[in-house]
Amino acid sequence: MTEPVTSTPPLRGPRFGSYAPDEVTWLLKDLSDVALEGDLHERERRIQSGMAHYAESLPIEYQPGREYQDLFRSTLRSSAQRLAEAVGVVAELILAERHSSPTLVSLARAGTPVGILIRRWMQTVHGIEPQHYTISIVRDRGIDTVALDHIARRHPAESVVFVDGWTGKGAIQRELTAALSEYAQLPGRPRLHDELAVLADPGSCTTLYGTRDDFLIASACLNSTVSGLVSRTVLNADHIGPGEFHGAKFYRNLAEFDVSGELLDAVSAEFPAVTERVGATLAVMTPQERTPTWSGWRSVERIQIDYGLSSINLVKPGVGETTRVLLRRVPWRVLVRDDDLPEHRHIRLLAAERGVPVEVSPDLAYSCVGLIKEDA
Image 1 (cartoon, rainbow, N blue to C red):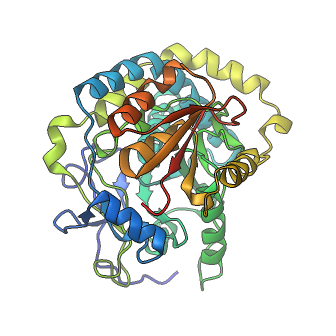
Image 2 (cartoon, helix red, strand yellow):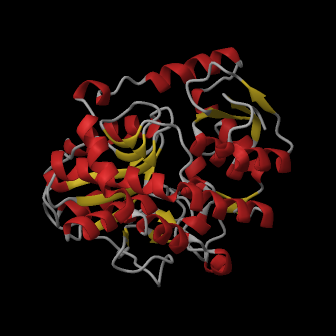
């Protein structure tokens, strides 16, 4: 592959993001000094009307109150061991079935802390230190091919493993499959394996998962303050030129609220305690039960019809996606399968703060679903 010209060098902490420089390399353009945030309702209106794409701007970072921050910490304490087990399972599957010395490529930004945790597991348990990158993928716009070129020039194609936090209905898995197929058609580009490795796969979209349970991954509870103080990614022609990585912002001003390292350390500290459980879980996982069924997508299609929504993209299934709706979109309502599940405490608190009704729907395929307000 010829070396294309790129004017955006890779980024590492502490210059960009709050993670240690060896934990992740951000293949992103630093847009920290660019005004990209706008009024939440106006942004939602423009996105839904087709006047703008969601990746062209950023929502204003919503910072929950003290009660919610305390709830995050208690959630992290109670779920750290379960998270550690899921990290161990997916990490071992990657090593056994994909590559003994993988190149981890997280999808920004939810994939980044998960990629770091998988790397820490491999480092702690196996003594290997995979290279870990974070790159951007944008629904309906594809993956950052400049970032893929950077990786493909430096690592064997067969070693590349894409990592995300969880699957919702499977939209990003579909986007990744389509994008990598297009990438392989470009002159001199390799074909990269398109299957995502995730902590939780409630949508049944992949074979590389820590669990299929729709459980709360603590990194979903907050925005940038649990993701290295980095925004979600931006693809805007006014700021991203040819040969440049997709962009993101580093919110240095939120440093006093940053719990990114706290999450990583809490989960990593549980690795020794779950090593045997990881082995036991792997021993009973069968090829048949790991085969993707895409049941989540079909469930979401039914919800879209039942609630008369114009787009499947207005239905966000799973704990993680529901939390995102409440944190950075204009929510319409929340559906929950159980009335008083402890894992939904943060969702009930956020919904109450934003005046969003919570409905009990016992037949949900997911533990909860967030619905975005139409024509906000």
